[in-house]
Image 1 (cartoon, helix red, strand yellow):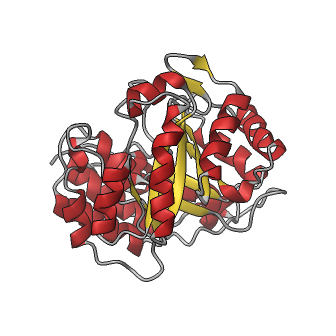
Image 2 (spheres, helix red, strand yellow):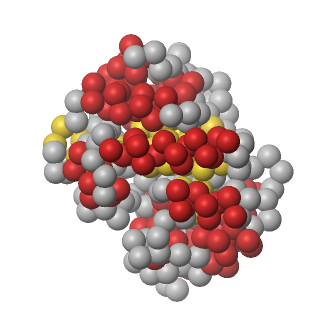
Image 3 (tube, one colour):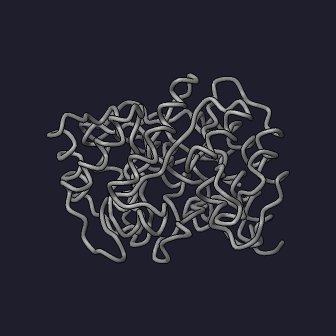
Length: 320
């Protein structure tokens, strides 16, 4: 396997970029929840451990959602019991409601995420709530979590476009995002759930949040690569001061409630770009590629990451 990352060909900085970016790895949760087959819990545990060894320090591990809705994550409690936390690594989990929070507290989880919507239709399809009523559902979850000393992150989906409603106004996204932050969440991840965003749209949305008093230090970005725009959109966000980027090892993932949502931005592709820009991540690209090749073999199909395909063996993931 080739070991050189993009910085092996020279690192060339662009003006206005942060010195360091934190990658919020979502592969074990957002990635594997979209798999057709159930991935064995021992494979998930090893996947998380390998990601930590590769230098990722924020690894979203699973979700305490009802197994009827996401059977791929029905083993959440068992997975957490199997984990051996690495020093300096955070292992947040997604919780959809108070029952999910109860289960997280039972397992000693210290960091959670909630998942909101910027549109009415997706809120009803994904949360069984309206655009307004979702905040009343989240409020007691966040309040209780904070009372127990937890950190709470918020996701906001459909920030750029909705498959049922079309274009989503920037002002509507900002209002929903501010509502989530006002509940007490420390960070808001802006999701391009169906991958229709473009760099100018990203800049306009971040400017909208800035005008509402929310700076880039409280925001993260979460891009899907449906139209090949994820890296360009990420670069646009970085020029606006964002320093936290969600990504999924091997480009795993999508959204089980939005059929047009394809895979997440691949962590390897993100690291390759950032290495070449001289932006620190703390991630060892060779180790990360090896991890995605290992997982692809167990999933029985190649990784969609361009970097994994370029650096990994030609037959990686071809068979189970």
